Length: 433
Figure 1: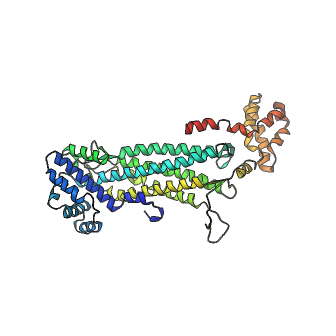
Figure 2: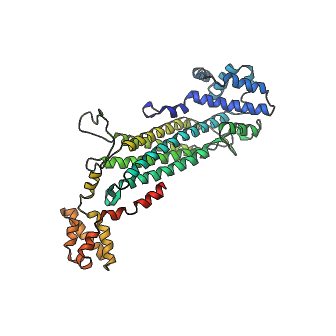
Figure 3: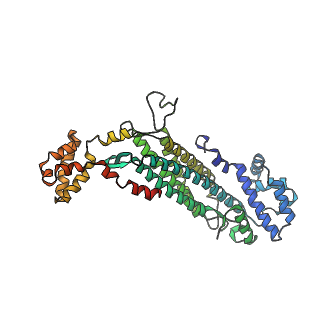
């Protein structure tokens, strides 16, 4: 992942140094368990921790060895042997490379999930604050991008809050599903290593044991994890697109914060573009793109192959780093979002009361007019507003057929905006408790 869309804490999870430290911990914890079972000397297990537990591994040296061995785990173990000395012969007893690689990958994904969950908490807090601030800020709701009926801007943000709360629950479940450990040896039979070793390592690494690993941890777990990230990214895009639409010049109901000294265009000095939310739309596309190869990784040959390996070396860091950055950016957008209630009301009134058409329709049906005739009467007057710029209320008050069913007072009553917001508190209680 390029530095431009990366944040240090998430990047560090995927660094070579972090990976090798996790590999060492897996091997060292396995040695502790082997020592407890009397398979290797207890002094050897202690030596391994003493000599290598607190060091930074020489990444360049490991790369140098791998250039010859063409095997990354063997290269690491060779370098570890150079550090530990003779007792290194007890390392990797009965284990296979996948025991190290798969367990490490799941440790990295759980750590990444923890950061993403913290990101979601910050985003949820920002959404809640702004939703409460604009709970009663009336704006027009749109369907098909066309004026529909009044809502509040707070309800728009409450919807986003509820959506990201669901995202958080999904990620918690995905984290639990991915947090497994496999130390089962070749083809996963435990033939050369006791299952108790796996139990010990799993507990030490904060993981659950993989019931059947077949040498590799089944990739349906990983597929669900990356699909979950893709869904979260889609929710990021949904909110970003809403902001982009509301920032259009013709609408301008909200706007990304434009900082002093910021430039919107190299050619047009007047421009204030929604660059952050446009960027988020692009980042969401990338995170979603990683879900498909993760699903294709599920179908491995027999007990194992490595067709998944090259995929995961890319999608593991790239998807989590990108989503981490995106969630952080979206939180900043929401926290600093400029909201223009006057423009919201101006847009609402652009078609002079047309947004109240359904209330008039319902009132006519309740007054005894058939639904077909009620629709015809309301639409007839509404089209004059669209086509001729008329005032909807005035047109209704001048329509003899409408007045035959409804009094002037009853018609005027249907243009009360507060009617549309009377259940906002109920919805907020459902969302925020």
